Length: 82
Image (spheres, rainbow, N blue to C red):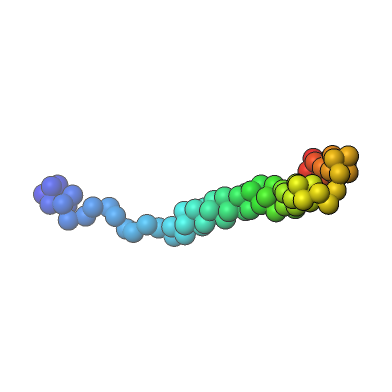
């Protein structure tokens, strides 16, 4: 008789009323990862300093500015990065 009771009732009443917590935790974790990638990934690449350095190098190579002006402006761009 005990085996019949155990076989017919597996004590599974569903996931419970707390089941939305786990998807919400995963969603919060994914949003956190995307926010951190956006915050720290784009900050260096979109700050304009790399684009400014490459544009400055192009102007120096084309002869639009001399070496002292190139070094002065490059120092300003690198200082802005810090």
